[in-house]
Image (cartoon, rainbow, N blue to C red; front, side, top):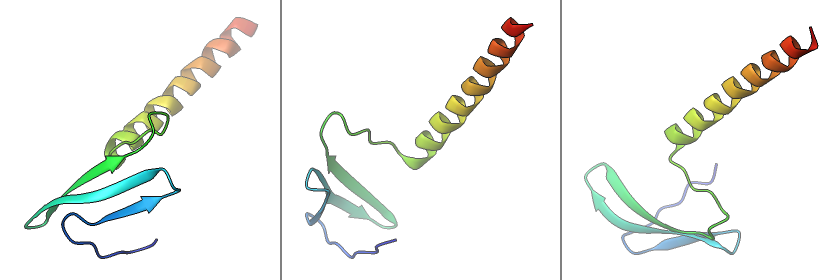
Amino acid sequence: MLALSRKKNEALVINNNVEITILEIKGDQVKLGIKAPKEVPVYRKEVYLQIQEANKDAMQIENLSALKSLF
């Protein structure tokens, strides 16, 4: 993991096409602005993990249905 210090209105660039800017700092909360191409998905980690879990569950149901159709 790369750890960086940034101040308000400072930014960092990832892969030449994603820019993350510090918009606001209030206490222990930081507000970020993210500029990325539309084809680059950007999720909060807890949402991303929920999507991954839902996809895993869907694959299990799909595989079960495929197995049932064989018999």
